[in-house]
Length: 163
Image (cartoon, rainbow, N blue to C red; front, side, top):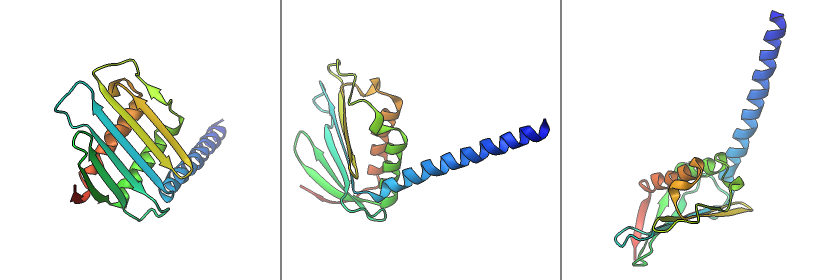
């Protein structure tokens, strides 16, 4: 009986390692694809809020290349551009994939007014998905986490110009 338990534990551990290894490989291959992340956040009903659109992109399939970042103020249309180090961008791509972004619905919380309107578009290789929300607090926690995970690396952008 003890030998059977040990064998069963060995089989479970082996299956778990293989599953985790396959998932890790799939998530790691994400950063080898041309990609784009666009996050637009509008604070409806707020006059002095910083409505903005952020575009992070890497045209080539090179995971060691920096991502280009463009931030646009939606009120003034002023833009600034910069570069984001590869590790920050690759981690964002891995997070998007790991959180199941491409399996989520296309819309959440659409009946709200005077709330934060968020549109997130992610292109990863041949896959593209846009999710629209009218209240970022009424979305799956995975999606909310992606919204704010995008904000984090922006603190590490090397900004080049302002127009």
